Length: 466
Image (cartoon, rainbow, N blue to C red; front, side, top):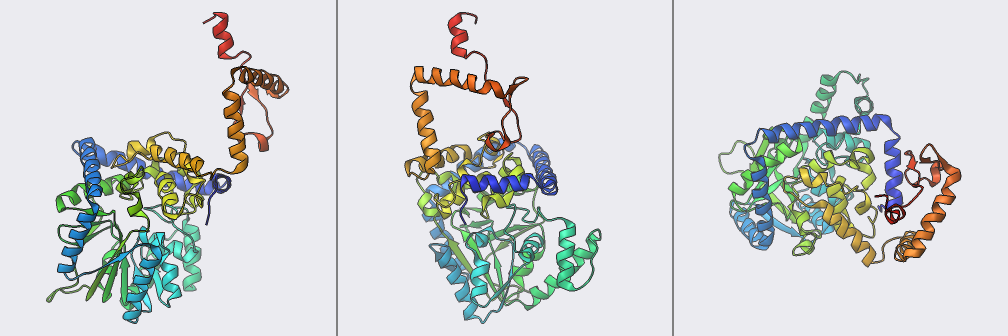
């Protein structure tokens, strides 16, 4: 998929025109925002912890190769098998190869943004493996054929009526939308059968602790533990930037993650997986495979966009962003939406393909204010816009218009002449202090544009009236 500026505006306009969707977006993101504020207010010296975490993430990335080597050594010593994937295609081949080796036809999946990033489900299906999402939100959008709408809450765009219709079609029963316990019971019954039948469990990894070679999963549903303990093979797909050197570092990470994401002091389930089951363990997989995914991440090290690798996927920036809260997740055309998606999507998939996303921001700075790692997303959005200009990605009509305006503004007399002519041309369309323009040529869309002032600031200043 590609998302140009025009395409993003079209997708956003469709979302804005849907009152049901707007209500769902504001309801969910508003709840997350208020919960985050309350949770951080209860944390002693939260700002100091964020400063510490920022320094921790920067120091970790500065020595990433060393920490990855330590993680591989300790994970292997614990009995896990570590695989390195240079890109998404390599990661898909590795996971599909493990499935083929074990004759897997059904894989139960826990929520994983990395697997969405590399389109793992499609690759598994092509290899003859049925992937079943077991996180309730992910399962709902899998049934609907949708990509995630939000990093933490992938199905916030779906109403209970839509969910009831999907479940009714799946089961052949007539399920009422208002009977939430019954809908939940149906999901539990159907997914439990998948847990028990799956030969492979697939997860992501919220972080990986180099000190012990452990993968840590943070979930609010018990499906994550079912996926990683019942099937005989567990495969975790983890981005190489998700390394915490020590458990002390992991503790700081976990103290901020749930609070920033959902406003919880700690998620309901925080699971550390260190190798396969040992003799005497009541459950657990016979094999654990950890796929360390690069997919363009290493290219960012040491450059202006390295800071993006500090992201812990909490989605706080989505919940605060005035653009995401109106445009919605699907407008971004990527598993990663909102301000962080507007930065990492072009970096992962190519700026040419997603040239519209760096412009999908008001640069208000709210994302920087709420980020637990204090990632300067506005700076990187501006860097990406500048990169578009350097590489000539800006569409020809826009480039020509911008060059013309820059040239005119660079010549004082021409600028003054243009401003004067503009005031004259706008007079027939001016009423009550506003310029009345047809909607199709109004750059402010539904909003009314203020009329041009009768005199410019330069003219008033020169008259000595100020």
